[in-house]
Image (cartoon, rainbow, N blue to C red):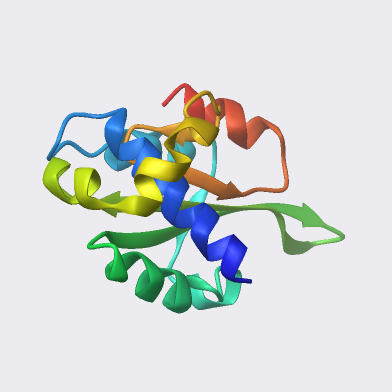
Amino acid sequence: MKKFYSFIVAALLVAVTLTLTGCSTYGGIQKAFEKAGYKVSEDVEKYASENKAAQEEAEKEGIRIYFHVFTKSTTVAGLEVPSDVVVIVEFDCSEKEMEESETFKGLVKDAQKSDQVNGNCVLVAYLDKAAVDIFKNA
């Protein structure tokens, strides 16, 4: 479990280096998912139950993270059921905080080439591969 949190922190820190300080790519990502038929879910705890522990781990490094969940539904036999759930982690920290983070320094190379990093956001969970394309092209 600790490795999972370390991965999230590292991926988040990598994303910060790929964007200008103070700029967030989340707004564009949200619009892209909504255009593709996804809805923002207010029930983050249901889909990203580890978020509290990950947030606490990130805060130890001076990083603030936010979890966003999008859901897409389809109708089956007259019932609306989820067909995809996407979890995105957005984070916020200054360049100084990044430079002082040992976690960031040690793991930055691992995630730099990932399609799951877009600016200051990281795609951490999805069911449909199309979500990766929506995310990286947002």
